[in-house]
Length: 235
Image (cartoon, rainbow, N blue to C red; front, top):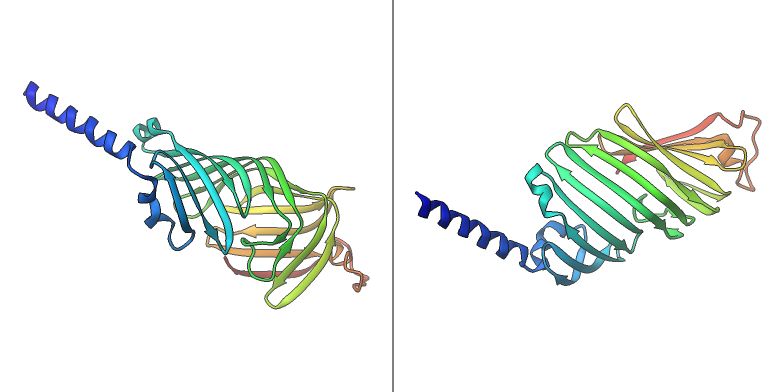
């Protein structure tokens, strides 16, 4: 019996060692086709990859926290550069997932997250936490995205809105299991629009008259806080 236990222990240690030193490229099936990877480096537990997401270069390094497996959770620290830059701590369990992002930066230009035809000014956040349960409901949102302003172009079901956005903040909260971003002009804390990512994977915009008034060709006698355009579409 002691010999059997010893052999099992040796096999367990050997198996963990093999897994720990396995090449990072074994993760390829998990990335395709979302991220096309061109180069791999390191191991499964401490690796790097270079690829592309929506034709944008994408580079990530990661270090898995092996001890979290004992708590039935996959957890890793990572550094990302490409469609966005950030340092993040991510975890996944049977109940859902969570991401803690620091030094988050979104570059100005075409957005790979908000659909074709969309362009955004540069955004940044010192700290942003989001979490989602396994049934799709959003469970946590803490932090804001900040911009000094710039061109915002939205393609809302064929309606193209081009707006010179002022210095603004997109403040994230949870409402009824949905992830809600409240877009506000930082001067005067005036509401401009609401962006909602729903638990059933839709994206919804509610545009206030105040935001459209930033277009040079737009004039209105509506209340600035009136929601004048609502659009929802699949993510």
